[in-house]
Amino acid sequence: MIEPQLAHAATAYRSSPFGYDKEDILIVTADGSGDGLSSSIRIGMGKEIGAAALLNHVSHGEIKESLSHHICDSIGNAFYT
Image (cartoon, rainbow, N blue to C red; front, side, top):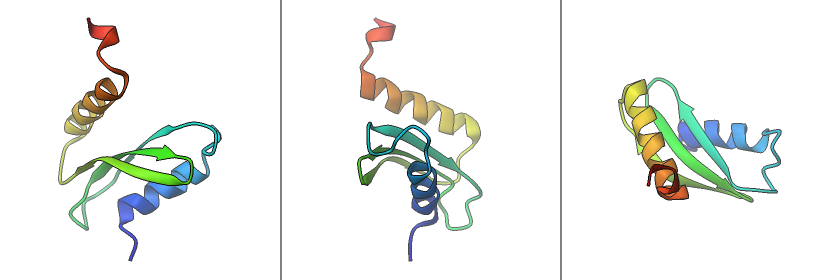
């Protein structure tokens, strides 16, 4: 069985108008938590989708906080120094 958040991410990534095969793409999913996982932050790289953060039963504010943290880690703190 495919994990639901990964299925959501794959659908969004593969249908992206940004050219999933040309550059890395940030993928954010969020829905109910029927399977215990409410959201995910992933990186699409070519034919692969890697998990940056998997979030269980969190609020939208917590998703934003986690997303901000992972973006800053990815690009460095150049904008904040």
